[in-house]
Structure formats: C-alpha cells, structure tokens
Image 1 (cartoon, helix red, strand yellow):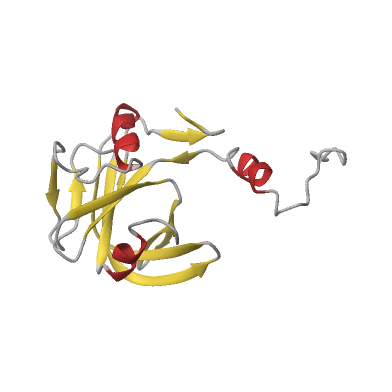
Image 2: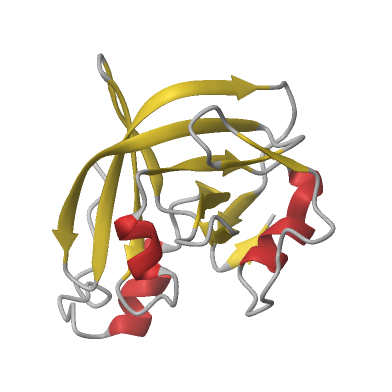
Length: 165
C-alpha cells in the first residue's frame, strides 16, 4: 500500500495554494458551458468541474464560482450546454476564460432546441435543462438534465498539474 510520508502530509485545508496544487494532480477535461442572458445574447465560460451524475435520469453537473461575473445569469437560466473541447480547441479555452465581451462573434455555433448555444465541432456537447442547484461553499453546483447530446471521436483537451495539454 502507498503509505504517505508523514513529513509531507498537509492537513491545512486553509492553505489554498497547496490544496489547489494537490487537486491539480487529477486531470480533467475542459469544457465551455454556454447559455443565453436575459436579452437572449449567448454567453459562456471555461469550466473543468464537469461530471456525470446519473444515467436514469440523464444528469450531469458542473460548478461555478460565486464571484464569477456570469454567476447570476447561469443561476437564473432555464438550462445550458456543456461543450467538451478537443485537443485542437485550446483557443476556445482561452477565449471563454477571458474578459472579452462578445465571445461568440467569430465562432461557429447554433442554438439547441431549448435555446442554448451549442459550439460546433466540439468533442461532445450536452444540452441540459436545469434540474437542481446546490450550495458548494464558494461555488454553486448546477445539475442539469440532459435533453440531447452529441459526440465525435477525437482527442480531448485536458487540464493537469496547472497546465493545458
């Protein structure tokens, strides 16, 4: 069994940088979550806190920082699309994590049947309606019921050890 070296065990969960570094040892896919604001303008943000929850009903979750500028818009929305990025879409990861206003200006996208923005040519996408939200400390956990989805065979864009690979 892998016994931890007692000299290196950190029990200070208030040490945010050390905790974040430890959490970064788990590789995650990179997504762009999209919805529309109250004026029906598309908005989106880069997210790596995505997971499946249930197959029946089909549920997925992601979390949003309560300080995120689009926090209220996502919480008030009736749903969203989780777009999983391919290894060739690092530019979209950067675009949707930037403060640029109109991120959809030169982007190939369309609205789902439920009115949520789908980014074309992503590895997969999940069109969701709001199912339930949960308090998650400094984040809010959003669970969506998948109403439609799509995928292609390609390589995913990953986040590991503080780097995009």
